[in-house]
Image 1: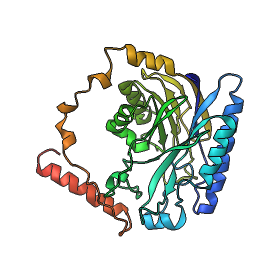
Image 2: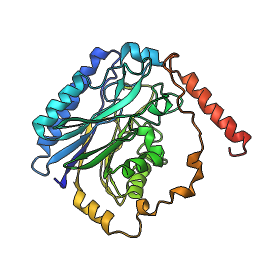
Image 3: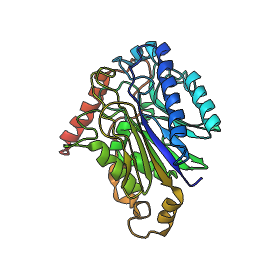
Image 4: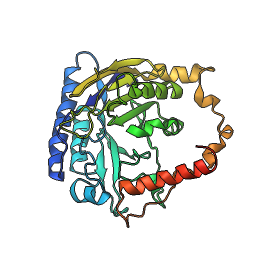
Length: 335
């Protein structure tokens, strides 16, 4: 299908404090999938559904060891099995809310992970590359010595080529450019973006960044933001504003900003997008990209390979790494 409906689904649920509580959130998101597909059935075929970051659990404990003790799960798991069954039942693709992931290959490390699941099963697993420093104590795969998996996987599906990045990843245009270079036509944002940087003036970074990434990559954006009330996901309030943006940066649909469960839908036309990519000579950033013009990308800034799992990942360690980069830049007169 090249023309179909998508749903950006934001959630408002209490944050689990134990693994056993995650099933409540999963069950509600499965209900939302049914509601979107059935409720909008008279108007469009919903084929792609996107959920926010931390929809299963947020990193409420301040160290990796704390998360590993209480909230992490391997991926795949019992929850992804349920999404696989639902995707097969309805013939849809589901970009899951994130899990706090543990992996026996990386002992002592926590990842912030989302999966794209279709009727075929799990199509990719994406681990957040640009963690929200210094507060997030899950690790970027970039920070692990010897990590060899694709950082920015793209799934080639019957409904288009799909890639995802998580929340703060979107502040780095390089992440979305790499997904597009890897073939992505639809860019998914799985996000937990809090006030005051959310979906309302005077900043409205949420909307500005989503629209810019769409137009600079000639790609659709489907962005699901956390909609939890302050009482559910303290210490922040979450403004929602989940949205769909077309490849020209036009907003096709957006949930009214504010907390609460919401589903916002729009129609994607992949043939129109592909026509524009093939036809255009102007306003074609991929074709115009002068990679050799940017020597900054041959430099090293935030240090790779610094996490071994031997020492629990903490806010203090993140802060030390950031301050070291800032000091070097200041000493070089660049900060």
